[in-house]
Image 1 (cartoon, rainbow, N blue to C red):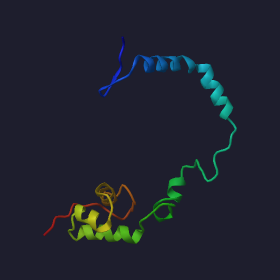
Image 2 (cartoon, rainbow, N blue to C red):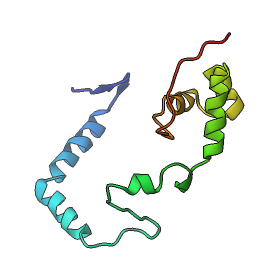
Image 3 (cartoon, one colour):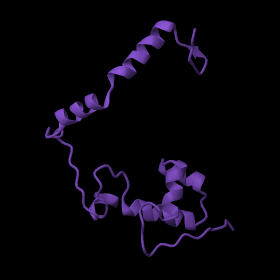
Image 4 (cartoon, helix red, strand yellow):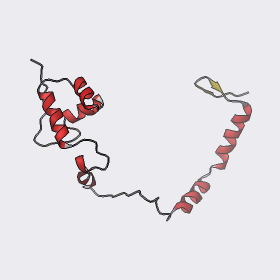
Length: 123
């Protein structure tokens, strides 16, 4: 009697036999036939993929279709940080996740060549 344990759950003999029989059905030939059957089928409408090295530059920042921020907001956020407002408070004020605020301030997101991150201490 063989039981497989997954986080405390014990499968019955019947379910174990069903799972093992499924392994026998999936063969390399079957996988190849599925792959060949789906070749040449167009993608669903609305899905557009561009494989170009500069694609991310074209849709970076405000130009991105789902961008919720603007450069004006980003610059205000960075200026508020320079004035001494902590990142946690900025997260609350701008209604953004703390990690996103941190990435903006460290110039990982919304990159600006003129911006340098400096740790400002509150006076």
